[in-house]
Image (spheres, rainbow, N blue to C red):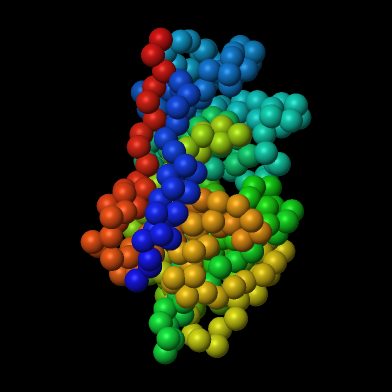
Length: 299
C-alpha cells in the first residue's frame, strides 16, 4: 500500500493542478448546443472578428449565414490562422478535432487542435497504462516527452497517450499512438483493455482545457522494452506502483509527470488496490478523477 504522506502529497499536487475554473466563461452556441466556453478576454478578441461571431454578454454564436458544419469549419480555420499568426495559440499541429453534441455524433464543426483550449471545446484522448506483472509486484511504464513537444515538453507521461483527431476512433487512436510512442505492435496494442474515463476541466495559459480521457490498461510481457518511433518520446522508465505514486506527487523537479498522465496513474493505483480504502485521502483522491462542470458567466 502507498503511505499516507505520499497520498496527501498527491492530493495537494493534483488538487491544485486540476482546480476548477474560476474565471467567467461565455458559452459558444451552435444549434442550441454549447460547443465551447470562452473567457471574457478571449471573447473580446473574438468580437473583433465581427463577420464570424456575434458576441454578447450571455454567449457567443456564429454570425448569420454561417449555418453548416463546413461553413463553420472554414471560418474557424481562418480565425485560428489569424490567432496563431499573432502568437495567441500554442504551436500549430495541423490536426483537427471534431466538435459535436456528443462523442461520435455528427460534428458541428472541425477545429485546429492548437485552438482547442482557446475556444474551450471538449476534447477526447486515449491513454494507456503499460503494466508489467513480476515476482515483486506490478510495475508501470512511463514515457519521457520530447523537449520539443508543444505542450508539457520534457515531462513524464503515460506509456501511451494522444488526442483523438477528427475521423479517428478510440481503438484506432490507441493503436496509432501505441506504435508511435512505444513501438507496441498492433496485435499487442489490441489487447489494451478499456477501464473507463477520467475528465479534466481546468484553466491553462492557452485557455480552458476540457478533456475526457479514455483510460486503458495494457499488460505487457516482462521482456518488452518500449521504443519511440516518431521522436515525440525520448526515453522510458519502468517503476513499481509505490514509486509511480511518488512520481505523481512531485510538483517540481526533473521528473514531474504531466497532470493528465498523473490523473490516469492515480486512477490505475485506485483500481489496482494500491491505495487503502480506509486511507484518509481515499475519497478525495477518487473524486479528482471527474471534473466539475464549467460555471457560466452571469451577464
